[in-house]
Amino acid sequence: MGFLQVSMRFFYPIANMILPYFSDLKSDLKKAGMKISAQEFLSQGIFLTILVFVLGLPILSVLFAYILKSFLFGFLSSITACFFIISIFFVVYVNFPKLLISQKTKRIEEQISFATVHLSTLSGAKLPLDKVIEIFSKFGGYGEVSEEISKIHADMKMFGLDVNTALERAVERCPSKNLKEVFWGILSTNVSGGDIDTYLREKSKSLMSEYRIKLRDFSHQLGIYLEIYITTVILGAVFFLILTSIFAGITGTSQQILLLQFFLIFIFLPAVSAIFIYLIKISTPAGG
Image (cartoon, rainbow, N blue to C red; front, side, top):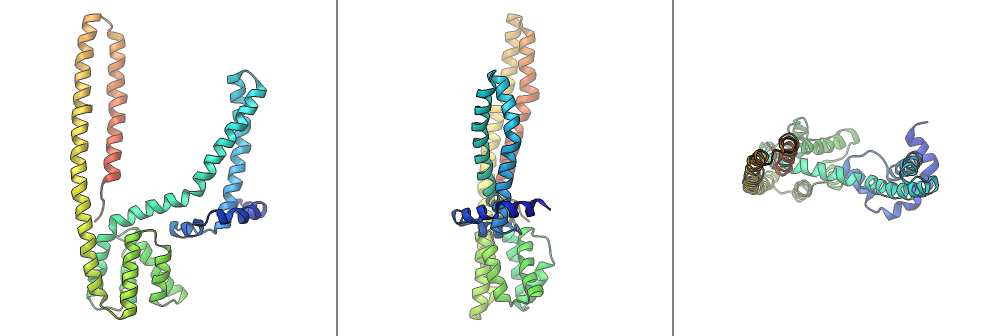
């Protein structure tokens, strides 16, 4: 019997009872692309939480008993700590789909402006909408956007849905607001008999304009990061090295100064540089 089966067998009633308190969980799981029901997800979470408690209690009991020099106080402290840990664990577990959604949304936003241009080009060839979706789904160059459109094609091909119904389902599971607007726009234009090519061309211009604004903001942000890094980190480190070297020559405490300089050069500077690289990476508007 697998982990999921054990979870469902023993904890399904509890999961079903607390499900109304997690009203967004079902839609979050769908948007995150997790092929699991809300009851299964909660059952697994309850089982994992109990396992964390059972495994953590003896370990923390021994640790606290050793620190506090008393088994009774150590045991009571470990129980309190375990309840605190499993509370945090369960909250993080339940919000895990939201983390996946935010990551998927970011990847979609990085590619949506370029993907919409490609969709506009295909639509400009006056192909039927289902054929446009089929051709685009075979082109995997736009990451999550291509994946979402591939799901639309799969709904039409495997389940026999018409293009409008497939688009409605795509809107329900799409995590990105901009991509959802694109799907809604295509759907409403197709239902009303409008020109999809014109809509996609105007939408792609709007998204490209937003992307240029993001690039401009990023270049300004990058300039600020570089100024901070050069003035505070590089110049500050050089100034500190000069001062400590002079101080070591005057006082004769060269060993302690060398230890400080070693920490600055081989630990502090690489750590700060890594933080700056990470900040630049997360603020970079990727694409293309």
